[in-house]
Length: 426
Image (cartoon, rainbow, N blue to C red; front, side):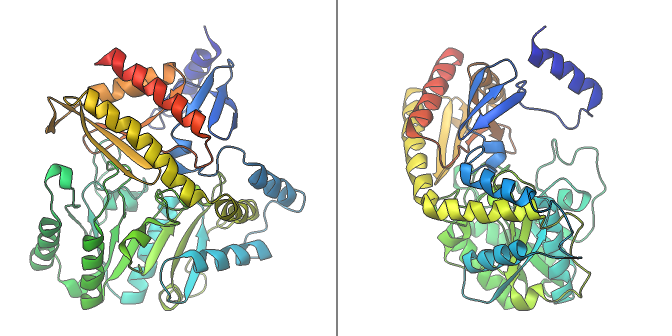
């Protein structure tokens, strides 16, 4: 039995099946956009730990910052005896967030925590309870964030009931015929049929849906939401957990819409793989909760803050937003060639910077998703040394999230593998 197979058996016996794994490759070391498992097999990583290591695995600057912090201390709790790195990182995140309003930050540990704290802050500031989210959205796996998430399998199945006061509307999706007008009409119907606008605390939206299938909200839709929120005193929350930190070609994807959200969630790419998340928002809103109402034991850990500061330096010094655009264009060209070669199976190619999607269908029909082919491609690619991730409420989207530091020759090698995999399966 191989080492990977042996560890998989041990994992199945030791870890609950709900915490599954996409690939049966147990990683021993990783560098930039490459990983090696315990058997010495090499993998090109087009998942980046689900958009976490935007700066690549083990970036020297991030590694050095963490090592230097470990020499000093690993934990004191920022709510007990704080440290300068947390203040400095908050200052930099406040400055980086879209819009000219004064900002403030809180640190937590996970993206789901960031989302829940956004809702707490919104409810405290507005004195209202209702929250509106979108079909296909993903906001976490806690009980409350599952309520916000707009995809049942596998995230919500068997876990209900979920908290009250949450309402969903269609996310605009040109490929599947959901227009901006239809989404806005559905929102108005929520106000007419489910909850009056004066009782809605916040609308939460991903500017590009992650788990939902990498669909981008048009700028006109985001601008319309901003106007509706302003009209009714509702806060607009931008969930930038997967889209943030140069992934889309800008520091935050909301910048493409030229609006300023009231609150933002940040995680994943914030600290190069170290557990850290944040809520950043307009100062007067962020200050609504009383002292002690926000926080957590590990939130804003000194290790995470040191890594986060290094990540921001790397993004600026290596111009990773520009690099995301270059990588995205390179992959887009290859995927569109695949689409030309297999028009009956490749329904759509989408990208915003290095957040790229390939949607697979049957008979060239958007209404006939091909989840089986998607699953087969991801599995076969892993066998050939390429790590891919699937997504989409129909299970038929392959997402590409390579490190923004990946050399172009690695990008090309990964796409060559994908070409060979698809040729072997269709």
